[in-house]
Amino acid sequence: MLSSEAALAGGVSRRLRIGIGLRQGSDKAGSAAGSPAPVELVAYHDAKSMCIDLRDGKIDAAVRGELPSNEAMSCLKDTFSLESTQRMALIEPIRGGLFLLGPVGIDEGRSPAEKEAMALAGHSLMRSLGGRGKVGLMSCGRESDRGRSGAVDRSMDEALLIRDALRGQGVEASHVQITIESALEDHDVIIAPDGIIGNILFRALHFLGGAKALGAPVVNMQRIFIDTSRAKEDYSDSIALAQRLATEAER
Image: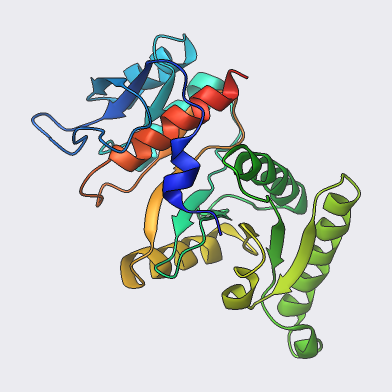
């Protein structure tokens, strides 16, 4: 199983400028000791300035940090002309096995096409970090539950549709049904039925289950932006992730 340490450790070849959103006087950026190479941190106290500098190449990547989520996502959409932001959270459970979960925004992953695109992006991202990139498509029940609920049946049909589309593009993908606990034994990209369920899964795993949350890259844009929770005590792992992904983007 891939660990966070192994995923963040490889391939950084130069000093990068990483933007980090912080409140005045905050020390949550830490020393960036988890970063795989020296990094120059640029603190931002408003999302607009950070998004514009990211667009213009004045920083190599950005981490939301303590900036308000609505403000940051709105600025990203305006600055990069996005219809929506699509985020996937990089999570490491206590038992180990780093994986990518999406969608995690309550208004994200609203269609099969969006979830297919997210799965493809997640597959590429995990492979760049040293993982398999095998995709597990969740639904709201088991196959044996068919007929009990129209909504459950539709979620299974949609998962199977996306699975077949991914396989047609050479991506290993399976319908893992509702059983995320067994899916994580063999998959490192998990696509939830929708962003609401993905958000609940993330919160249960991280805030209740003690899983490590490295951050949530926005996967439908060319530049590197890592969404984070303001509840994090230290952003050094998110900074290291931004640095790692920015390096991969240059290759």
